[in-house]
Length: 333
View (tube, rainbow, N blue to C red):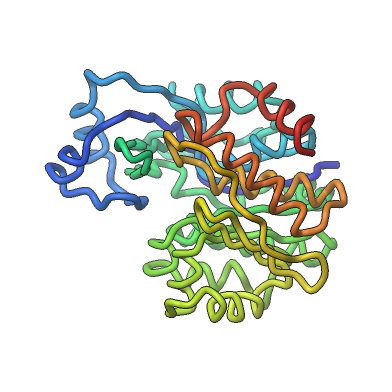
């Protein structure tokens, strides 16, 4: 029995501090996630080779699942990796937290040209804004074959990142998981993940959402883009047609939990941010953890705000150790 079953990209995140000049020089759009091919990724990695950096297993949903596990629940993660050094690092790093990964994540299959495991270069500027350059690698080939249906059926929640919409096979796997969840009474939670997914992969997102889900996560920019409006209230009205429970993060202003019962605004927590990477990921994980323990949506949003506020005072998409999540649970849970 799992509390949360996660599906998403398996990436090794490498975080490095740069200035805005680096973004201009390489014509990189600040503050967004951009998909790149392996050749460009190698070029960017070479450009920051001499700078201090930090690596950890990542990917949006993987960060959320790590938070779920750290906040005292039982989680599993299904993904696709190559049998290479990067893939080995991902498996070792994530499973050290207690998260279970599908046993066939690194199966080589019959392909002689297997490719490599995914990577994400997280470029952090002085204003704590993060810009992500992502090479999905073999993760783009995530398919129904990587789904542990037995584990999914025995879970309370199925959580998937919107980034799956960038790959036809990953979208199909996401749809499969939603359909299995609907059949077996598993709650379905989806994150829109990034405004680029809303703008360029909307068809895939619509397939993933089907005729509606239980919970939807997004930030203000994604919500406005989805509804093609500049008013949050109008965007929320449209999002409520997708899920009865919607969480919209508003940066420093906090977040809004929209629900028929127990919803409301959750004010932000005043901190000095140094890196906003992963704030939305830990927010979703904290909400899921709180809801599994019986918190109302508004209570879950407030707990999630506190967790996200703690995260952004550190560098990286995750807190330093799993014990740091335990401490958050003791303080605010």
